[in-house]
Length: 253
Image (tube, rainbow, N blue to C red; front, top):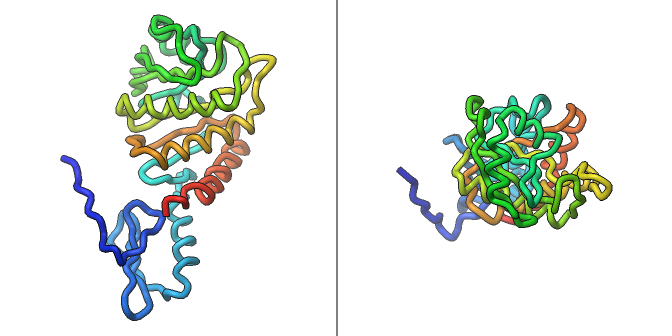
């Protein structure tokens, strides 16, 4: 069964947490409920803003090195992309649905040629959109869906950042439509031939678009996994996520 949302009294001040609100009392203090818990603490009202910001950061960045945005935690990881525990995998695609190298080639090699055939059967695909196919043999690893995010006209053709942004949002929407709880989301627009985009620019654009999507929509995803080449890149992405949360997620307050 589902739950019913009950709006708090108008005198309560909303924090950035989805499940925490601060009721001020007449003594100049407020009670604060920890998200997911039942313990209350008392704080001086004059220092409330600093306290809220500190506690929000502590809750936002958890022990798994991910950063939380509402119900969804975004986690940069290293290691084999196909060994991640996810229900859906996104990959860059072209309008023909032909699967090339990189993670797309790994998916075809491990999951089977039928994944590519399903994608090609839906061609021509729309630039900036996303479609889904079955996961083939990857289903044995718990993967239910492959999401093809269309970022180029043909195999190896260049792309643009606005297309990457559109395809990122479309991939997230498709994951929600397929009702999966976890998604592997690799870089979608880098390394695509002569007009390839810088990795850093693609990463920032995708993080911004992902955070914007999570702000705009009620997302079913519990976890978004961002694969990285090494620990240094993973830490850079984690810091970028923390910065994005501070800059953009606070707009919900």
